[in-house]
Length: 309
Image 1 (cartoon, rainbow, N blue to C red):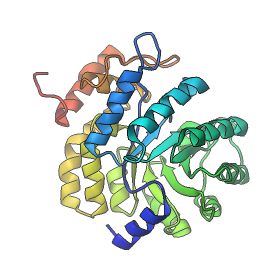
Image 2 (cartoon, rainbow, N blue to C red; image 1 turned 90 degrees about the horizontal axis):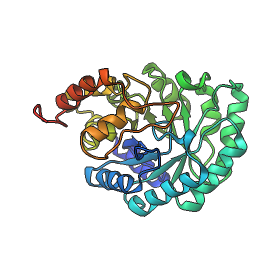
Image 3 (cartoon, rainbow, N blue to C red; image 1 turned 180 degrees about the vertical axis):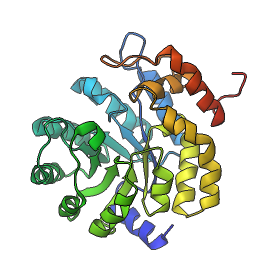
Image 4 (cartoon, one colour; image 1 turned 90 degrees about the vertical axis):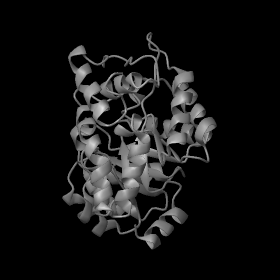
């Protein structure tokens, strides 16, 4: 790790380098948010060394939660981990006014940053995306720009990201393009102005080895300690240690997407005993039975289940 770079980032941002978990939202078999399970999972991440918490993103099924439910989830996160793990709240949607409403809620509750995705489906022009992110940054909460063209249908280009990077409240990028070659391009445009997080579990270790600052990871839901250790090794450019840690996780990285996220991740968290139900709100569903053995084998390979469990 470049110590000067790390020190600079620590002073400037509420977030930090490392492994941030894209947290699931546990639910009861009848679809209510399971608050005791959520609190237990939050404590699990504190104990496991998770470096950041991304809550109420796509993995958290945020699009199906009411504002009241969001408030309850965010309040629990602040009560359990504030001051221990930075809290990034997902606030992205199509309507900018609703993004503002969710951002203000995150501010009021006490979150440390907002994850703002490129508005999906409507395919805004690049200039519209720049205006959108700058508008949200003016609300005062540090903003993480989320670029995931595979889900949104729009790709925020690096030269336009550079137009946002000078704003004091735009602090990071979550890059879920899976394009490792883009990292160098982005870094050339923004320098050290932004933390650069991978949002793609299958390529995150290489992303950090090439100069990224960390990941926002689905795998970290079930393997938080391993993911912390993996990213620390990558930041230290310890290739041998990265390969040692990441080898047993590779099947898990891939197979947690055998169905739409977070369906497999929720089943995996249940399977390792961290919650009682793998319920996903419609239009999602619980993991299809034909994938159970696949996820179990991946958890076993990762050392998260004993072969006889």
